[in-house]
Image (tube, one colour):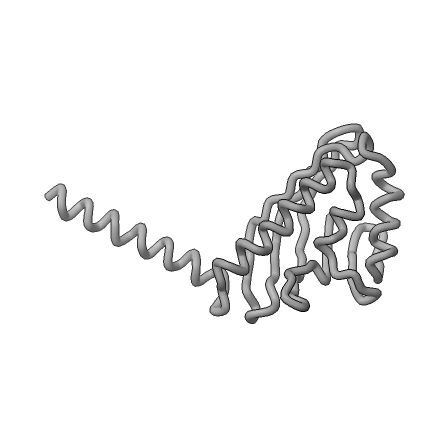
Amino acid sequence: MKIYITLIIFLLTLTIIAQNKKDLGPYYSAKDEKEILKVMDNQVQAWNNGNMEGYMEGYWNSDSLRFVAKIGIQYGWNLTLDMYKKNYNNKEGMGKLSLKAEALEFINKNVVFMIGRWQVEGKKNAGGHYTQIWRKIKGKWLITVDHTS
């Protein structure tokens, strides 16, 4: 009897794991997921070290970058950097950032849709959710669209 219960639990676990990977989209790649999460980790480290330009390395350095926030749509890497610098003007003001990817969907081998949570603790406590489109451009995963609320 114990063998049957163990076998059932094992099969259910495999089914759940398979379903979770399937939810990531038909183009899911563990290697690409790891690369995206590494970019996010680098962004968090840069932010927490007061390095805004380092944080922005996770974004597509293009005038076509789109950032959507409460104030509206903003186009361009430089304008996005300026917006961040205006709102978080020094290391103390930047506080401590944390990012958590809640869901990833691989749309194709070069495009990923992400939903996540962000939190800044410090002088200005703030947090919320974001949706992003990541694209693999010249071999690097970069955020090309960011909607943060």
